[in-house]
Amino acid sequence: MAAQPKLLGTLPSPFVYRVIWALKLKAIPYEFIEEDLTNKSPLLLKYNPVHKKIPVFLHGDKPVCESMIIVEYIDEVWPQNPLLPNDPYEKALARFWVKFAEDKATSVWRMFRSKGEELEKTKKETQEMLQTVEEHGIGEKKYFGGDSMGIADIAFGSVVYWLEVIEEAVGEGAVFEAHRFPRLHAWIKNFKQVPVIKENLPERDWMVTFFKNRREALVGSA
Image (spheres, helix red, strand yellow):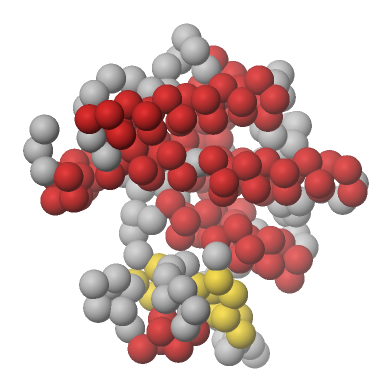
């Protein structure tokens, strides 16, 4: 019998949760190995020698790195409950929105680390990113791909849920405003109500405290 796959990560990393959600949606047993990023383990350095970052997914002795590459790998190896559509065009659209999340959502993480003029700039960039998704990504659909959750929802779920926490931790005005992004607010509500997602979300109040403390350490109190 093959050994369970292993996931090297640290919590509450949004990138690690992308992989957790994919594994849980497919009911794949796995072993989670907690990493201390201030003292990286020999296992992490061995299996991700290029970037030395989490998450790393070990399937046997084969390491796969980068969260959305891992999610797509999982989807190909375990085809039950597919995360990518079969139709080539729909698949291309899903990959487009994953790429958009990877390229544009960096403003959320920069917002967390910035203050003053740089903070205002990153808030504006984040709202522009959200507006694009509101108008062109979600539209009138329940999920990015229609009625069922898929790979683009996993990519953006880790952005929007963490954004809700980060804007509270930063505490300098709302970014993800309900009146401005009604479709995205409906979408994230649907996303969080999927049983597997609901059972595998980090607790919000704990997250807010965690990110407030991290922010104070990074940028100092305002």
